[in-house]
Image 1 (cartoon, rainbow over the protein chains, first blue to last red):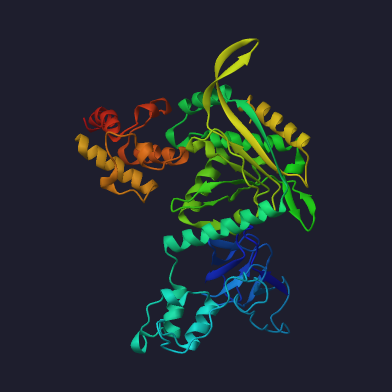
Image 2: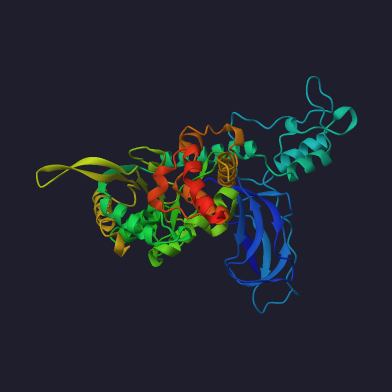
Length: 387
Length: 85
């Protein structure tokens, strides 16, 4: 029997609310199939299977919130029969589970009797259910006696889709937690390197002139590919820091920082960047941005990035020194592309430039490797036709 | 198509990319990208949508001519008349 656990969906997501099962008991499941849809603070995520088998039992109900790592279903292995496989007890919901240490400053609200003075009337059972489902009872309109909040009201509120403001507030909190952890645990070092962009800009303009509007490329795609090419010279920047050790990744899955229009950001992966051409990367990026903004991503896109690229230069800043997204060990930033004075052979001339930066984890690499990476990145961007 | 109609079509298209924008909010004489949060990917999506909905091709070198909604109307009007004729 295979235990199907709620996978990690990034450092800032430690739980998920089950929105929908996509596979029924008895259905076959292939690797990569979407098993369930889970709501996180950042998006509704399609949870993919990483194993082959047959859905045996769903252990979590729609509307329930469980921590990452919870067994949410069991699969029968290929060839295994349902007979003889015992049914399992359902796992506790997130609120009842042992982990998730609550900050000491926020004790659980005491269970109040119905119609306590000055407070919203909430039945103790409804309050307990609200705690279980992680709903704030104070925000629920009651339909019970004297406007009391009932269990049904709580369940209805829990099942309702999050509003934009809710999601934005939760995302803010999640980003804050992940970035605090990053700054607490990761000894960052930062490097910057000015990169002449004239060749890349000219090459892109020539290329896009030949292309129909639907096939045009963006500079961001060249930059992402150049990062992947340059990583070949600095493998200690690509991978994860887990359990006290660096685990390099052979594949290069680049997380691209995408801002969400209602606020916040998300950095899902473009997979296997080193193996893809610019056209394929452009299609992938277009699709990823559209889905990230629509709040519909796949679990592998959330958990797989081996490095992140941020292009904050789009908004006009000269350079960006980013905060690494754990458990990754590096983040590459690009500032805006500007014409600046550049000295070559003793003369000053105007040249299109960008400031490339690297934030890297000193546990996994040293500055000299980072410097080599940035030099290689600069070199790759001088040969856009080879990307 | 009249200039005002072109502008409202363009705003409609921008709203498919940036749904938070209110139609009456955009000043036609002020730079669009100062008023609407559009990165290069959003901008490309607008250009592609104009191509699909209005059947007008906009070469990349013309992007710089499209700073304001008034610019859009001025740029698209002759092209749309040609298609209609």
